[in-house]
Image 1 (cartoon, one colour):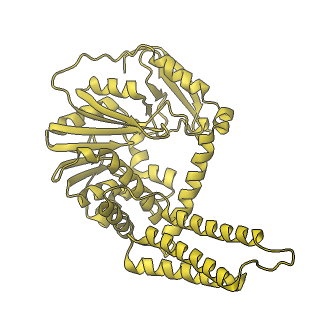
Image 2 (cartoon, helix red, strand yellow):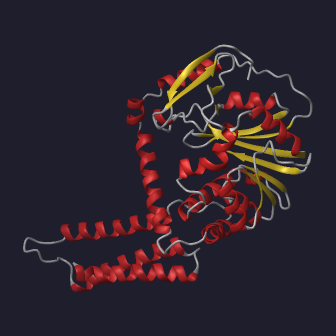
Image 3 (cartoon, one colour):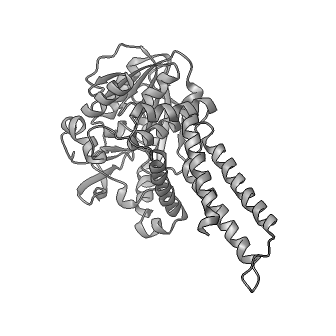
Length: 400
């Protein structure tokens, strides 16, 4: 970025253990893969989704997961949205975020190079998806009020050229939202920091400097709660700014963070255990949410987005798993009460009336909890869930 000629090797392998040389510029701290590991055009058009998702088109669990990510992204930028905005979604993938914006009344055009995912978004959600790379797609100047590019810039061969093109399509007062992985993140395993699909790695300083050198001015930025993702909002600069691409101290900062992020230290962090638990909980909740079969992507997203739009916010995470937790807690509480109140002859200290009252109180609590979780769902789905839970709880005394 700063045209420097000195770089430090910061990585020698990718997340799969294959050889991958990654370096950091000593002048600005930008991190990139050297040499390039593949033919980008062939890889992203045909192979990328197969390599990372093992599928040509998204499956229901992929759609559900991406839909939840889309809602999280919406929550971060909704203060910038207004009805009727003309939006360009670069790297639209399976179309989940583009579809959410159309549900909000925005006019969206997506750009996606992957053949399978682009066709799926066009067919499933009737979206306007231009298949190809952003550099190849013809876009009218000053034609978009909002441009979003989520986790795409790090994949491109020339990020500066991409930012220049996106600035070109921004209307007056238009906004560009860029999200990239944060190279200073320590939430992931050190062995997962680098992989072949990410040609460049940014932190706040390098992303802001690169944008400034290409006619953009940062107006907002934030890191995700775990520090893994960096989201930055730009608008076109009023006048050409001096391109300060050399960033003093940034190389030392980046290399120091990477050197300190070691496997043992990572394993001993409490956040590592919590991240693992959240991932397991998410996988389980996906199975519980999709237990009825294999719905279409549109059915999955409509149910998810209907709930969010009625609430005006992102729904709570893992509701089905939380319901299971409540039921398990009720069973544990009943078992503890029984053990505490039983005498030496293994006879209940409760009278029949007391035991019956406690049982139905637990039953009512579980049903109220289930209703709170499922009340935003369809009536049929809610009846099925409440009926199944009632049957299980009604059989508990017999099983005991």
